[in-house]
Length: 435
Image (cartoon, rainbow, N blue to C red; front, side, top):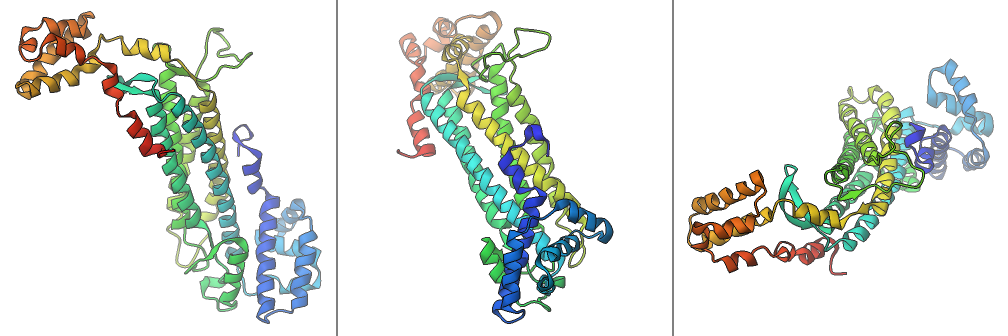
């Protein structure tokens, strides 16, 4: 985790203190369940709860023990016994390390997902507000980076809203996918622990029992989770890239907010760079990179190995912390995005009305010309606009082949900007509903 790209609430999920507290809760809930079915004394389970709940787990002490044991869970259990006393012999009865580690990881991933879903909600709110603000702000649409036909800036933002609504749904599904618990003992057969314990612990932690854990929770669940984070990151990059393009000097239709005292360049005082969007592009690359090792973790040896462990200790914190930061940074960019409708209009008019070429093409075919003939007529006049800056409508009106099919007055009517955006309301209704 890089502090520069971290937010405290998400970071706190991955601290050693949080991890050890979750480990204790797993062990204590398991002890309570065992007491209920008569495996251990109820008094012992109560002591475990009472003393463990009050304990301040000393990470330095646990590290000191692990330096000798070379086993993190045993080090924790040894330290827990220092707090609990003789009743600690009833802790971890019939359990294996993976029961604690895997269940804890899933608790952390669920908590992280809750924060990420809240992050997306903030972004969705910003996108919706700005989309309605610019619902009718006409701008040129581009394909291959080249002027195509008009759209509105609101429609651009509505597209992003719909994409991040899907991102939210995917995060909810990923949370559900990974919200499982395994307290099944060695090789997952429950030979030394009753399945009731797993059911009890799962319920207490807001999880569901893993149907077959084989000692570890199957890593296809985690692969899906991290792949989802990668997809959300890709959507972040898509919107960030759009902003970067729109902020280019030659375009300047929108730009990141530039605060008082902000500096764009150490060498050039005039610079106002899209640094936040560029940063988001880089962060998205990092989040995506964590998906591949998560997928490679799926193929473990037999009932278990720990080749996945070192991977997850890195990608669990890094992927969730980075995506949390990126989503909030993007929401801030959208909330403060500076939009220039006058520049949009100026860019729209740069090519002398070429954005109406398809409408003229269709009119010619409806007037009897073959599609090939109509295309040739429209294109030869469009190229005059491209090559020497001619006015497209004037060239069409001067072309006798065109006016023989479509009168000049009808051509003029085809250059109405409202024609291109007449269904914006329908698009918004699809995206946002009727409210």
